[in-house]
Image (cartoon, rainbow, N blue to C red; front, side, top):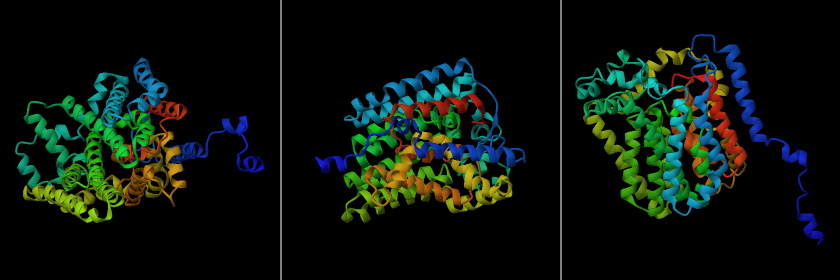
Amino acid sequence: MLAAETISAPPRTRAARARPPGPLLAWAALVAVALVWGTLAVAGVGVSLRAAPLMGHWRWQGGPGLVVPALIGLAVAAAGPAVAARLAPRRRALAAATGAVAVAWTVALAAAAGWDRVTAPLTTRHEYEPFAARVGDVGDLVRRYTTDLAGAPVHVQGHPPGPVVVAWLLDRTGLGGAGWLAAVALAGWGVAVSSAVAAAAIVAGDDAARRAAPALAVLPAAVWAGTSLDALFAGVAAAAVALAALAAARRSAGTAAGAGAALGLALLMTYGAAPAVAIAAAAVGALAPAGHRGRLLAAAAAGLAGVLALAAAAGFWWPAGLSATEGRYWAGVGALRPAVYTTVAGNPAALALAVGPAAAVGLAAAARRLGRPPRVDLLPLLALAAVLVADLSQMSRGEVERIWLPFVPWLALAAPGDRRGLLALQVGTALALQALLASPW
């Protein structure tokens, strides 16, 4: 009896139970510091961060349109954990349902200020679709992409030709216009969320997928995913990582080659997909039996190289494109934005808002287990390392709430989505952003 009394932890007092956990306080402190620092030193200096650390400007735009996303969010917070528990044994059903709810949540947020807001951000002079509509010969565009980059819109300058080619193909198949492109972006976000849930089940089992799914369904990042083609990039990269995990689990070289090909497609859409290559390779290395790792990694490398070789044959050499984009970036806004603010506070705070406070709680727990990480921590910790590299690279000074969308689902896998209070905080964060931030996306 004495031993049992010695081992048992004392019950928590009511005050201790009411005290916010440290990771939530750290999350709030990071956001507050970035907001205050950004408002005092960055927002008014002409670097397009008027709502620093975020793009856009602060303006109240709440109203009746927020009722629908609020109802969806509250329904997920109330019933999401129970529904995820019922669906968990059927992995495909859980992944598909989570992706579908994420798309509905994203559409509801985007349409809160009017249905035109779902498509309007994709029609500005900076975007891909208006530029693609003026392209006659897409083959010539690809061949001259790096040499003619200076005359292209800013988002085209920052990416490989993939997004323009996608918009051009939609136009030429009778699916032109921002509406169809928005549908593609939304589908990409649904694929990103469902792929992350599926990968969690493959890597760490049904319980890990069940626990994370509700939090992924109502990510605050949906504020930007619904109106940005970066959601499509996130979907392609996430599908590649999920295929890599599946290849490791099944020891399938064919699936590994498919993962590599998907990574190649992601690289042709965004240079920011490069860390996803490392995440996929690390996942294979950690999950595959030692005797199969080399074969699977070689197959994935072949799939990746094959896609980039086809692009090179068409006239686009990926390293040259990256170099040209880097030159345009430093000739423009990249050289103007403050490195210390964006690296130390702005970028981390923008990402913190995108993943939400629940992910902060989960990532803190994963960090505490860093010396003995269980499989459930593998993908979130790999994504966290990739984000750190991206931040230190200085190629993303601001706008990361959009640019880093491909990392968000993997970081959010750490979120304890079975805790209704944290889910409510996720929903509240997204609704507050939608109501207060007038974003270009």
